[in-house]
Amino acid sequence: MSARTLVTLAVIGVAAGTAVFTPRPAAAHPFGDPQTVVVTPDPRRADVVHVKWRVGGPDDLTVLGVSLGLLPADRVRADGTVDYRYDDPGVVGASPAFTGYLLDRITVTGGGRPCTGAVEPIAALALKGATAGFTCPGPVTSVTVAVRTLTDLHPAYRTMATGPAGQRAVYEGANDTHTWSLTGSGPGLGRSALVQIAAVFGALLLTAVAVVFTVKRRAFTVNRRVSA
Image (cartoon, rainbow, N blue to C red):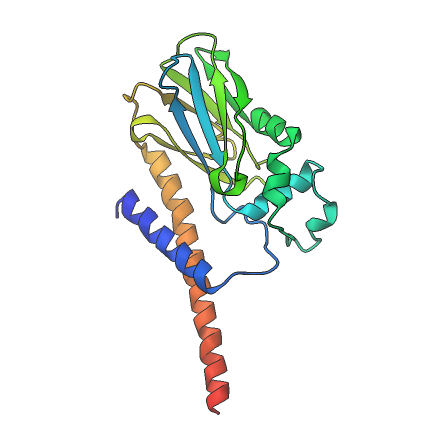
């Protein structure tokens, strides 16, 4: 089965599970939808690269907001559930503490030298994510990007990353750095990345199928009781 087919099935399965079952209160889910990162070169400046980060689930922003002191500590309960509220992404995205966190957990080096990052204005953090522009000491044709977002909250968080010319990578655990070609000549999808991506989306698909099965089983039980 190709990576594209696997991803498609996973997305369909997750969508189906979400449509029929929405847990309340929301629980933080390092094993749920992964974070995403997109690495792109600046079209006008050869010394600038952009990194767009997007959270996997909006309730993860609540957990992050609590850890940064932006939201009350009791919003994350002792049993691990999260009291997510719709204005949480706005509170987190508007804070300098969040932009500082993003630049601390996402770093870029070009030619072995650090690139200076600046977070662009944020709107709709949960839906659109946040983008940081990194200015390197000189023109670069490849950069090494480190992504460590949310792994300080739970080591199981993963990040699915894409780059120019179809390049792919998975950031997780100790594998928190990856070198990206900005010229479009880099490898598309390495074997190790393919295995990681398959594992991530395979787990999502199994979770979605389990949710759908559980809901249908409960509905069947209720119908039998009503018929009786």
